[in-house]
Image (cartoon, rainbow, N blue to C red):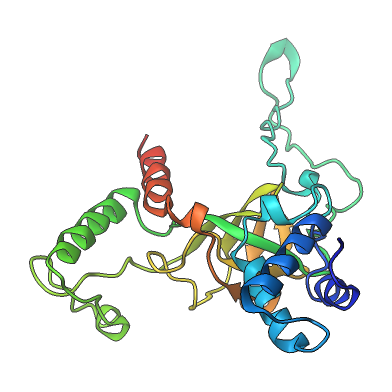
Length: 255
């Protein structure tokens, strides 16, 4: 049985891309009705609150229709070969300045004006070395075992961290890099301008956000507060592997 028309309309208006899978939405509505004993016809506000919470906690691979989100070609990272220097007589490199060929200006791509729902699959810090992040990760584990509290943000900003004792340190903050997914297309993104609510070590995997006209350059999305709306939540299946995914990325950087 399909989801109630009013619910389906609300979902399509508030979460237009990718398209929410009709079967998933129907099952979601049935589960909410039986679990909380409410109906959208009499308790629409409460009902839709539960629907939205379930959607934002879902794995987008399960809840979204494939091919209705981001165009995969926009986020395909190309390896462009270096331009070859022209040769002069006798095969020797020419001293002439190589001019760029005239043509149309490079087209600017974005995620589009219609909000695109994505979830975080990985998050890391790229303004600091992988080695330093590994050391801080180990320190965090050691101090967590001692039952210490997390270091306050203002104390970290003042540079008062003690290497041998003290609260659990926060990761340094410079520029975050993300791996995002609309459920079927996986792509890279960077924090082009600071988004203070995104915190390495705190922000869970499966965290949802809406991207609106977010610039894409060489396959990478450039995030900033003006083109990102944070929706929150987490996906249990993804977040269970948060540390594993984080360490795998650091080891890859270390070679």
